Image (cartoon, rainbow, N blue to C red):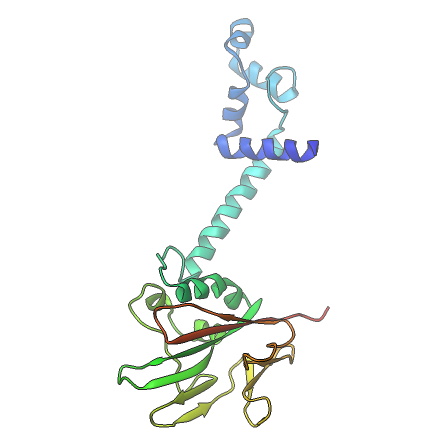
Length: 234
């Protein structure tokens, strides 16, 4: 517990002071300078622990922690640059759900399947299943997150059906194999990485390491996201 407090105190020091000299100066009182008459000597005494009211923090530790903090900030900035949802004002729950899953799908921790049902620009009702991770790698999602463009299933996605023309297609993706011939279970998707099967039938569990999340949205007639967490063998 005491160690945690000390760590927190040091982290605050790193955040508050730009240089080690600034930190040392904060520990020197006007009385110290009056008697010592030497600012550099006063700093040395603080560093050695003979003066100062705070925790003793060596120069090497301060600089190491400062460098680590700067690296962490840089990493977060770089991550924000790669996330196309970063900095966007997302008002619809569907876009918020996509944003929450963007990093995990880009990094491979998760492979989500998006089911959408809505009317296209020709007012025809269409539905389909989209491999989110694959689309993120092959398409610019910034227009979707900014609201300038609407995400729709395509005939090239995992599954597509036009309710007016009755056109139906299914295609494998880099992450999933489509199992469409099973008449009892309906449409199934097998993850190519861990071989687990996702069942999209809402009446049954979706499968191992998978979850089904219906999304309340004003953008679509129906939206559901199936999240599958891949487990690497160790």
